[in-house]
Image 1 (tube, one colour):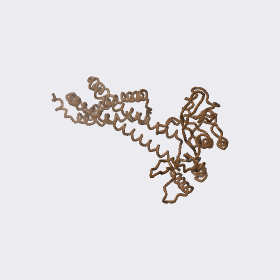
Image 2: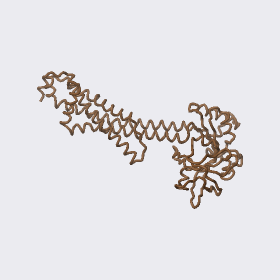
Image 3: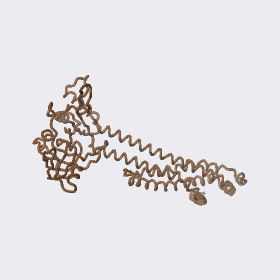
Length: 410
């Protein structure tokens, strides 16, 4: 008996008991659908983390000022401005793996345009900031070295600010007032979206660092050259760890820190932090897939149960087939094909339900999902493997029946 004939007999046997066959396939359908949907949800989360990593800037480190202590109370990072513009230029000049270092100052303020106003983040930056953050413009031009040296009153705005102040109008050339100081908009930044900690990166206005110090945010009384942060872009991802050590050694040397003294700055490797988040989302995806796979195992047990019942019900049929010349392997093949057919039909329906479920989650829950064709294929193949694994024992039991005893079975 060939495989095709066995498949025809298997389909005929399944059609005799339609309801039982459907209920048997239900576990496989739910299992395959759940695996595809859950992996799509997890993959969507991974893609979102990767997008956030890219939005911050590739191979990025951030150096923040240190903390101050008052009355035994440590005030936290950035409360004492310990890093300077010269530190940034020294890092860019003396650390070979550094592509660019961009000092900056941060603050908040109310921005006014006509009868509209908006509270936003103000960043005093240098021209290197755009390269460090991989932040292109959609229109206009970025800040230049001439703007930095001349402390010009020009600004580059983020998408959120542009939308709230200008709507669909073109902001280029418009004059806004930042803390009562007029600024001319010369560019609009490309959209970055939210960071991993939920901050809207597009809700920002960039102005020359020198202008920010002299006319908007002010300067430290102790050191007029101090800055709040330095964004450092490393040339290659493989050099991040080495560059981190070199930057720390250079800053400690420049700040004349003794070996027993703690750093008076905070060096944060954002790529490592976000890579950890990406690995966590991968673990989440595997966990969701493992939980969903339990349904496949339950479905397989259901197939084994029904196939054992089927062997018992068709004992006389098996005896009759053996009596007219069917061999044990023919009976084995027949029942094994029947179990695999149940799994494959359930797998096909499950794939359809999984794809539909993924799109439904994306639409109704507004959650990013990403369907991987390899996952779909793997879930389908796994459903066939479940049929082979759980169908083998009942098929083997049927093939070992004694023909005479089978014919006598009532």
